[in-house]
Length: 138
Ligand SMILES: [Cu+2]
Image (cartoon, rainbow, N blue to C red; front, side, top):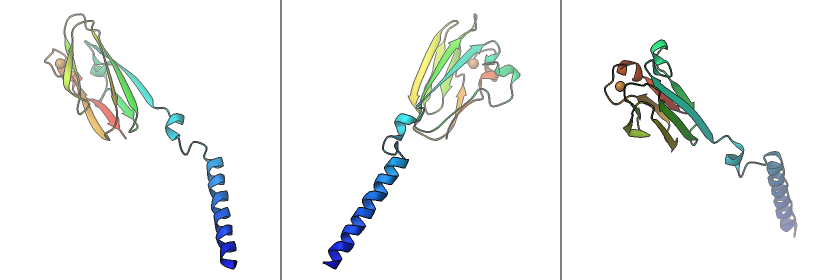
């Protein structure tokens, strides 16, 4: 009898603790819905590199996102003369080529942490300025 009373008190205490936890942490069972899950970047490719990288230090451009985020990178080749490439190691290893005026949109889930290089994968006259972009997934 005495043992049943002790068990009941323990059970009630556990329920109160759980209810208090849920009241204080309403998103504990659905944190994803309350966090920002989308990141969007724009990469303009031109005679001045990636987003003006010819005038910037290295790395440039720099994109940083938390692991688990859906990432969209809009790429536009504003160079009226030359094609340029766009590659992101691990997330777009094959790379793409954008002819003058072309656009490309890359969307992916940043599921792997790390530092990934963003660069031009085809030869062009401003190639050297398009070798040190960076995506960091942290
Ligand atoms: Cu190039």
